[in-house]
Image 1 (cartoon, rainbow, N blue to C red):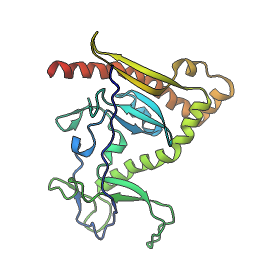
Image 2: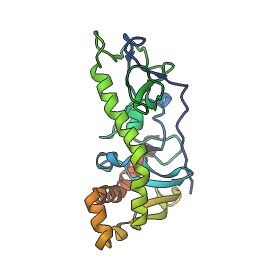
Image 3: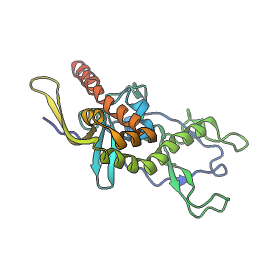
Image 4: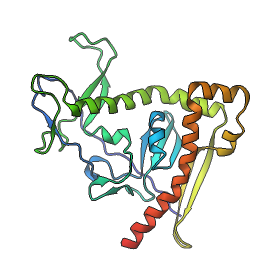
Length: 251
């Protein structure tokens, strides 16, 4: 059995986006290994669970900063079974990759009227997609947001709100006894298999056994639905195995 891991590449320091310095900026939103898409897992947030659970298994890891949810994309290191010929084949792409070279940050020293602590859009100007000939405009001719930037704003909002709200949500899952440790064993054949250790998943039995105040509290907050979707997503492990076996046959 192998124990695959993967990590995202680090980016250079981004700069604050503005419609004066970057008025004519064009950005191509394209996936690829060079942009961090060739990974076997990507972080996702509760607001993404509904769409993500249709394509990926959703698991959790206990990390130094707390619990983080991940979409499983592959079994080997740097393997994304949903990336083919430079494009995603899944119905959903995690927000952390849909953002392209953009990121969200905080700036407490704004002089343009923005209140302290407002989330702001940053861009990595060293990214090869920035300034690409086939890129889309970031701003309209007279300074307003182009459709691309409106889309990026919504993606970054998912990430910002996720980072802010996810710790409390996962704490509620844990308090309700829903997050259970598990080592996932995956067999492709008698000889080949994988072990995915030190994971947490939403336990179906614990979910079914919820009652009383715990059940009512999760239902009122809308988190019962999120937990149910994360639990049902584990059925996609077989989907992941099928994709892996097709890839092996073509190798």
